[in-house]
Amino acid sequence: MDRHIVTVFGGTGFVGRHIVKRLLERDFIVRVPTRSFERVKKLKPMGYLGQVVPVYCDVRDEESIKDAIGDSEVVINLLGVLYERGSNTFVNVHVKAAKRIAEEAKACGVKTLLHMSALGVDKNPSSNYATSKLAGENAVREAFADAVIFRPSVVFGQNDNFLNKFATLARFSPLLPVIGAPGLPKVDLGEGKIDILGDGGPKFQPVYVGDVADAFVAAISNTKSPGKTYELGGPETYSFMGLLRDMLRITRQSAILVPVPFWLASIKAFFLQFLPVPPLTPDQVRLLKTDNVVSEGSNGFAELGITPNSLEAVAPAYLKRFCPPRKSGEFRRFV
Image (cartoon, rainbow, N blue to C red; front, side, top):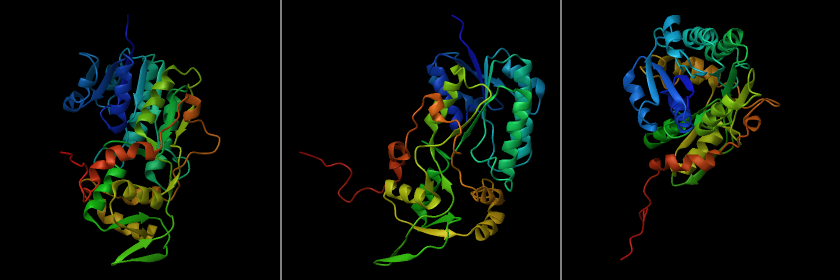
């Protein structure tokens, strides 16, 4: 029996690893274009010998992309950057590379093209990240009209770069910034502890990475998916402050949530953007000025037959490592 080939650009990334795993479980041959074969080695144990096929590819070169796609029936593009460095600019990665992949996929006779964008990119003209993602969507659709586009909200899961980042910060800092939250009343809890009441900041609809991966795989066989855009959000909506509150509760950590106005965050981000891996950039501050929630009436998980997991159902398992040991010990020993 011939096995179908799926080429996954960005297959070694956070979302990519989960998508690759699910494709391998469904007996696909998964081709992973890369410039670093070392990164692909981590994917190979997920499948049987030869099921994961690394292929050298430079997405700046059309011929390189064409060779990587080859005789694939499905192509998935997950390429994206959160900040710009050197030639890895928003335009180069989100627009130009996406356009090349779509054009070569069409030229190679690929049946299905799945493209990952981001939620809210059509609502934030002030962010270069958002405008480049939207331009990438348009470029992909122009080259491959039946492309399926996914717009996930903030993606959480083991090794995510959101909850893990703030949980790590809470280990070392008594303060956690909540960008965009209005100044809120404070309550003295005694013993020098202060709590900030209320909610605030931009809204998110966190989505579990496993559910995002399931959506991509479901779209491959869904005959109604071609040409559609799916907005992927979890079952619950949180404000920035509410999300950090839940993270602190789950990890049993203590920190004061400090509202940081956008103007102050922009000043800090101006300096932070020059770090090798910037924790915040001015463009990310602009991005936070728009809520990251699913639009009313949009296609989503329901149309793909998927019930998304809540943050409460998933996050405690992988955030447990941040929990301080209980005074009486995690386990009671019986003699």
